[in-house]
Amino acid sequence: MNTTRFFTVLGICCVISALLFSCNSDFTLKRRGYFKIDLPPHQYRTFDQPGYPYSFEYPVYANVVRDSSFFEAKPENPWWINIDFPRFNAKIYVSYKDIGHNTFDKLRDDAFKMTFKHTSRASSIDQTPIRTANGVGGVFFNVGGNAATAHQFFVTDTTRHFLRGALYFDTTPNEDSLKPVNEFLQEDMNHLINTFRWKNQ
Image (cartoon, rainbow, N blue to C red; front, side, top):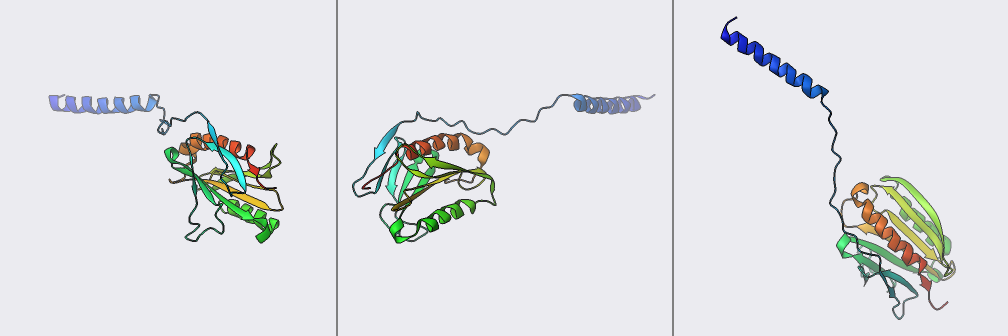
C-alpha cells in the first residue's frame, strides 16, 4: 500500500469514527432563556380622588393617569384612568360606565365580548366570580396563551356603577417570557379588587 492510499484510508476511518462518536454522545437541547426580572416588594397606596365614584389601593411602583383618549375618541366621562407600570411597560386600562345611561345586561355582555375577542390567540379563558368583603361583585378573567391581555375583570353594583379593567403590555405577547410579570401583576390586580369601594352609595 502506498503512502497516499494509506493516508486516504486513515482519513476516511477518522471521519467515520468521529461521526459514530458524535451520534452516540449525549446531547441536551438547551431551553430558551429570558432576562431575569427584578420584582419589587408589593406595597400599596390609596387612590381616592375627589369626584371619582370609586376608590382602591394600587402599587407604589405604579402611576394613575387620567385616560384622555379611547380608540382616538374622548372617553364618555372623566373617570376613565390608566394604571401605568413603567418598569414593566404595562398598563391596566380602567373604564367606568354609569348604568343609568346604559343597562347592566348590555355592559356585562360587552365585558364578556371584549374578553372573548381574544379567543383566536388564547389557549384558555377562565372566569372567576368576584365577591369581596366590601360588597363588590363581578368577574375576573384569566386568559391563557399569547393573547394581548392575560387578565381582565369587571366590578359592579348592578344598579349604578360598572367598572372594567384590562392589563396590557406594550410588547409582543409571549406567555413564557411574560409569565413572572403577569403573575406578579395579577396579585396587584387582586389587591385592587379586594380594596375597591364604590363611593356615594
